[in-house]
Length: 87
Image (tube, rainbow, N blue to C red; front, side, top):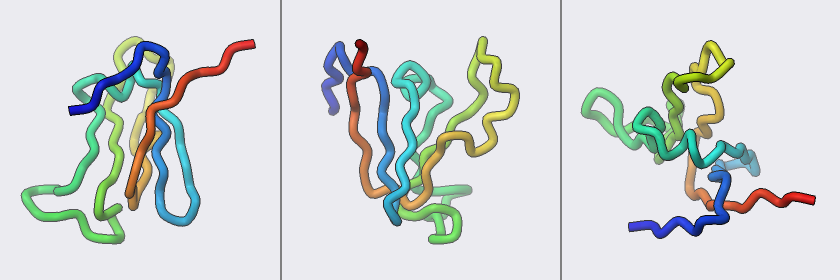
């Protein structure tokens, strides 16, 4: 179980090759955000993002019309929760 600190605002996905992408925590905590390891009962293949791939579904109330693989990192060995710095 992960304990989320109140100041956490984003999940930062670290993918292979140095790629990172951030996702607002409020979206990552919705039921339609997945950290996928399998598809159709089979483990993900490397070309589809194995070992883990972030997946974002439809975001209710968002101006983003198509979330098809939006902010979903492939080849995801880790992620961290980060705080939004405000000036």
